[in-house]
Length: 564
Image (cartoon, rainbow, N blue to C red; front, side, top):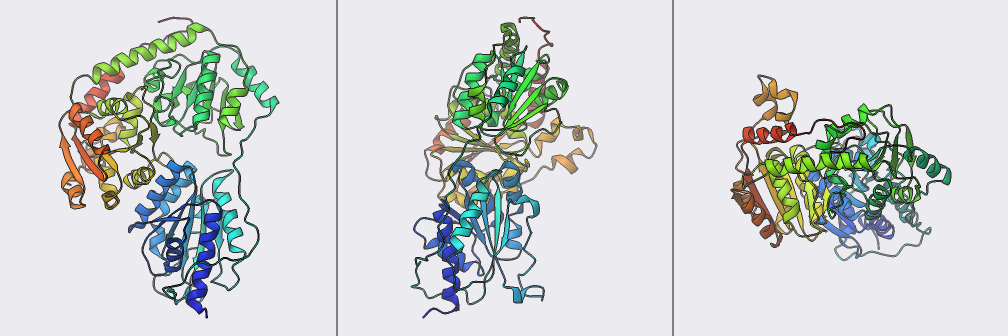
């Protein structure tokens, strides 16, 4: 005979079955009492893989990494109270980066709300506008036939039309632990709708109108910091060839790796510092990491700028878009029909890029360690198809500035939704869980900020390349560097021994001296079953001088028709 605990378990099991039927294969949970039915149901479901992560903030970023790398929704479960509040930073990142997560928050039942019950707070609406949908479930009932259908609809909402997190609040009454032998049971109910992938087809009129714009004069294609699909990358490259247009591709777009095509600029940030204004810009994939590219687009505000996005959310912080198209990127590129621009235009831009490549080679020459040289060497040293996670704030910028272009095909990730340094290691661990090779490049403050994530490293293969430049090195490049309180208020150097900290978690860790040693250590780490921390100590002042030398090498602006 089923008692209250068994009824609650079957309620949770119906939720788990709905997740599985809707295609969710991974759930990340943190240990807790109130969430026992949810965790147990997932652990006993044959189609759901469960990863237990003690720290709820780390768990949420780990789930974010899993979802980024797989392209599929990942579920989260935790106990009530402040536990789920720790999800908020990752939920905000998932919202802004459009990553599908299913948030299953355990809660006290209604009779324990607003009466001083322990570990109880108002959880409804906790994540506000950062979730696509919120639903408050009732306490467990005997009738569960509708739950799987409901969960499938919530999973569908996480997939689109604007992908992102959804939140289901699950009140659970004690007793929470059923009999040890209880198993899952089949529950008859409404059919479970499966959401099939769809591509937004641009209309013929839209394609004709865009073609008319880009068929006039000198044009450029800008690809921002969102990872583009393989189909989109191929179509953008084909379009660039047909239009004879240069591509300003962000390091996170994926376009700069696995190619040596001159249309794909190796150093778009440097080129944008001196490039003349184009007659039109075609934009894909969000806002660039590069401030110089964004400024270049702002200066071209009087020119047509067509933004193409696969979701309704617009990436146009400067308000320079003249046309907005919501459609599949690959289909738009394939459907455009316009003549090539003047050949001297691309020749001028490619000449600027060639000068930037020579300047980058010069500033990164030798075996001296600094952020830019490490990134330039890394993208050429790791095996093909390696996943590289670029941490905020200086690591991703150093890669965008100086990594250049590589014939090695790589998968590049970052948390640029809200660009925080929180959860960077946890996200990288999530990516590594389903990637054959994975490298995380983070600064010393980002490493410290997510130190607890190292607990994931005992069985997950990840090479962590730690750029130890003695604090917040990104602020050397900002106006705060001129303040007398700079070191106290912004640089904030820490005294942590990163190598000793990693070893305290049972991980391999080492210091490296020189680029050759660093690359050898990274590749050796990729052959190990667990995680290795590789610390490269960087002298901040010398690093800043090398960056400034590179930026000062930007060529003088060229004018229309001037071949360099």
